[in-house]
Length: 408
Image 1 (cartoon, rainbow, N blue to C red):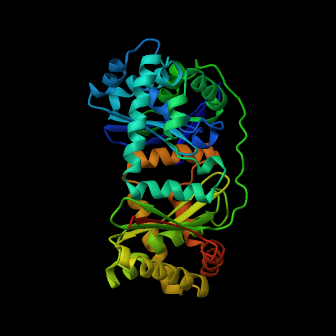
Image 2 (image 1 turned 180 degrees about the horizontal axis):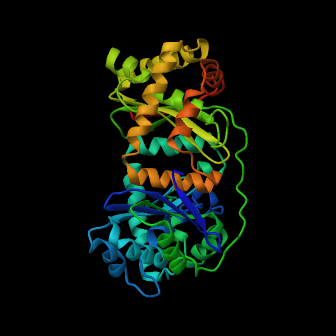
Image 3 (image 1 turned 180 degrees about the vertical axis):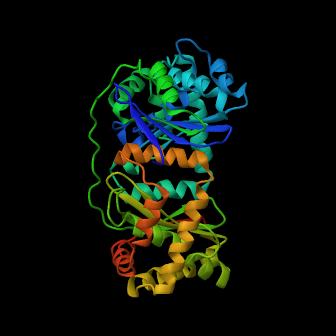
């Protein structure tokens, strides 16, 4: 087997992918993100992620930050719409030190008022900084259009108003409702004996009381595509077009991942880059992205260009999408697209932190992790007829379009 899994009595799962490297990468993933926040509490999941690195019952902020850095390890965290993830890279002999710290910050943080106020200011600065980056801000505004009135449309950082109003009671209620021990995975990529890892996990995570609170995620309602142009104090035009797409367990997910890679994925040889940047020299940056979520998905194409070139770039994007809707790929095109995608996935295994986080999320979502061979088998099973069907379902004329344009 490509990995090993053990479930503690409280529901927390332990995953090991063995490696002979002296470096260990590990993560603790919780199935709780911004879409799980109550109304008017936008940014709460992200706020908690920041505060986990502050005081615990036994450690000060400096002790938390120094616990791993003093041995040369790297500690970080992030929040998405559906997950909170803490991760660390370290020399393998420091694994217990890391497990001890993870347990402390996740289950024994005290969220003191003075630290809460300091971190509130940090996040408000983060929100202001994000608003100054149109290529980042447009993605969040696009998702707000795509999921209007739904938690998936809310900004992960929250707003100055919601962040400014959060208190310790909000944090406690969110964690009680969403930090379900059966929806947590501690995953390790490194040179460790599985029995010893399980024993270590039992020592630190096995003592955590079970929390099997059940949350019900609101499924997104149907929506119609919109076209919106917003004036911003910028010099270039930024554009994003896209649509709702398939959820993580949909049988077309692999096909859309393959199509996305062909259209605007990694590298310089994707269709959008060759047609719009290389052939016409229009956009410095153009890319597509597909993010499958538990009950829906997001497909989008982003580009930034000079004001006078924006409409032509948009026409060219739609031209490429129409090609995929009107004509199925030839056998050689299919073979080349699959080989490229398979090669990129194989190379991505070198990013070991990214790999172990992906495996942990897969265990949360599907209760199993596909091996590379299984992933490649799914890609090779895709047909030109399937990709044509996907193109007509996702790349249709109802796609949402959002443009940031310079103020006149």
